[in-house]
Structure formats: C-alpha cells, structure tokens
Length: 462
Ligand code: F0G
Image 1 (cartoon, protein in one colour):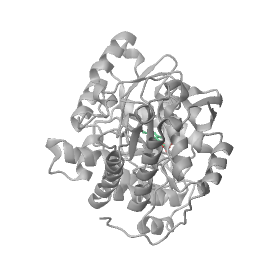
Image 2 (cartoon, rainbow, N blue to C red):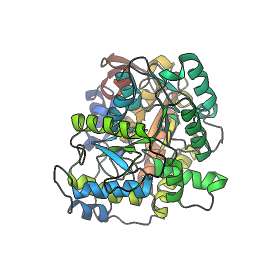
Image 3 (cartoon, rainbow, N blue to C red):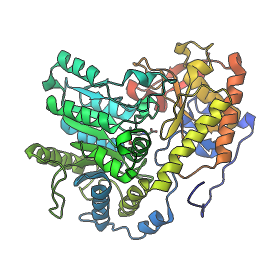
C-alpha cells in the first residue's frame, strides 16, 4: 500500500495503433526520438522522471538564488553530510556533469578504470579522458536465473588480474556502482564494498562510489545481508558510503528531483566540521581540482548548474529517499512488475533490480540474430503494441561488449499506479506471443562516439 496520495495529476493518452506506427517510423525506430506526449507509459528511465513531494515543492519556494554562498546550497551540503556522510560537495547539473568533474580530475591518457560495471555515461567520461573502462562484475551478474542476493558485486579477483597486467600506477580509480545499473540494477553488499575499498587502498587508487541509487541499494542490504537485518536503511546507507573516498551522485535518481548532481568528497565542510573518514592531503588536492573543474564546466561551487530552488528540493529529496515507507514501496513496485511479467511468461532477469525490470530479448525473440538487435526490436514492439517506452541496454547501446540483449523497464519514482504496470505486463506478453512476426533492425546512421550510439542512432527494419 502506498503511503502517499496524488494531489496533482498529468493526463496521459494511448494513441491509436496507426498513429503509434507513424510516430515510431518518424522517430527512426529509436524511441529516444519520440515525443513524450505520444507515449502512454514511459519506462525509458527512472532518471529525473519521478514525482516530487509537497515538502519538496514547498522547499522550492524558499530557494536562495544567490550566485555565491546560497543558503539552499548549505541545505544540500547538510543533507549530504547527514544522509550520505560526505563533508564536501562539488555541485553539478546532473550525474554526468559530476562524472566529468571527477573523472577529468582523476584519469589521464593510458589509464585504466575498474568498475563493477560502467554505466554508459561513466564509460564515455572515462574514455573521453583517455582511459580504458574495464568492467569487473561477479560471474552471477550475467545469470538471470541465479538467486545470488548481490549480483551487482564487484569481482575483486578480476580487478587484481587487470592490475597485474597493466600496473597499479595506471589504475587511478576503482568505482563501485550501487545499484549496478548496467547489470540489471542488482545490489552490492556492504561486505563487497569493504573488500573493494581494501583493494583500492592496496593499489593506491581513489575508491569512488557511484551512489545514484544508494538508498535502493541500502534497502536490499537491510533485507539480504545478515549483518544489517536490524538496521535502518539510513544507517546502512551511511555505513556503505563511509568506505568511499569520493562519490558521484545524480539527484535525478535517489535525490528524488528532476535535475542536479554532485561529487561528494572527504574533508572539512564549510562550517569546519570534521571528516568522518581520514582526510589526507590528497583529499584536499582532489577536492580543489574538482572544485576548479566544477567552476569551469558547471558553475560556481555553491550552485554548479542548479538553480537555488533545485538545490532546496534536492536537500529535502535526499532525506526522503531513506525513509522506510518510501524506499520499501518503491522497490516493492518494481518487484510487482517483475512478478507480473514472469507470471505471463515474459523472460525477465531475476531477481528484479531496484529501479527497473530487465527483459531478456534473446530469450523473448530467439529467432532474431544478435546482429539484428533483438533488444531494439523488443523496444519498438512494446511501443507499437501498447505505447510503452523502454530502453535497450544490450548490443545496440553497448556495441563493444558481449552482454546479453536486455531491455530495461525503468519505473519512475512515485509516478505510476498498479494499472499502468499491469498494462505494461500485458503489452510485453502480447509482444512475446507474436514471436517470429517481430522483425529485426539495422542501423542506418550513428554518431561518432560508439558509447553514445543508442541516444541518437537511427534504424530500419530488416
Ligand atoms: N551513473 C549511473 C549508475 C547512472 O544510472 C546514471 C544515469 C549516471 C551515472 C548519470 O547520471 O543522468 O544524472 O547524468 N542513468 C540514467 C538512466 C540516465 O536512465 O539509467 P545523469
């Protein structure tokens, strides 16, 4: 049962089939090119698409729009310190802005960055700075049937092997993405976090947590990791993040806002309050380098591309994200969608991730060879069939990787009801029933950076 009610609504409509077909064609069979008004249930992303609370809207009216020293920035700083434990932040317009700030400060030509799995923008930022992004998922991550409780974990053995090959001096950063978006939104345990922190320390690398979905991850830890059974989600989140030297945050996820992000760092905050970790000279250096890059690319270091009202709503949202009824219902809604799909015979990755359900298109459309992008075929068909927008995170989005052709149904926070998700499950089941009627696709135009292909490439049916 949801512990909130809607006091503002936005109409949605289901176009008729001929109009959906025309819209899809017009979009070059890439759903990123669709107008949102032509989409009935939009599960493209959970990023910046959620519903804010009345307290967040109220906070927006108190936003301090000062260029320097905004009070709203101080509110965000305080929320980050209380909820996530980082004393200093470099604000950014969204997560990838924070990635540009941090990875630009850490990575140089020829470096290797290790991650349980790089999200697409993370991969692109490491590569843009001349680095080689290497994924180190645990083997269970690729098994959509394994019931391993933490399939998002980082495989330290793989990490060590890479370090032996390339030399520790060429690995400036080890990143842990919680939850692991590119591996079906699976959680990472605190035990694994400690292990990765020790590994990063051994090789003298900066340990970065990509904390976009830290609250959802903490909820999984509370439920699945014995040590934390009696702990609050807030306490788990602080414990897990306490091992990181730095974090990258997109407020558009567990900040419960439509825009914003930051790099979280160790050290003394503006009020001279002491660090929770052991800040060193290198913490100060990293903060200063990030701050200067932030000023250059994002805006002065007390707004970083966010308006004062964005900062104020973000501060409230971060605190709401670890509240027990919110985060429990959030994850339960995603699990309910996963169950509804599985009940209808749709091949879903199990267990469900924190923010999304992933459908295995290789199993759903086995007649399509991988070169014909079964994932993208499924995405197009979901729109054709029911006006549902999903995203491909397989060979179309990641041309150079061998990952399965997964299609992600990401659930915006506090937005859709059970009837919408029922419609999604019925639509996906109808698509699976079509079987060989569903055609494959080929790419007809694509941008120069392969890491960003799925955002703007155009395709046609083959
Ligand atoms: N890191 C992870 C793990 C992400 O999932 C995202 C965004 C980012 C960084 C970048 O943050 O969008 O604020 O610039 N993920 C969105 C998604 C876009 O749909 O999964 P951003």
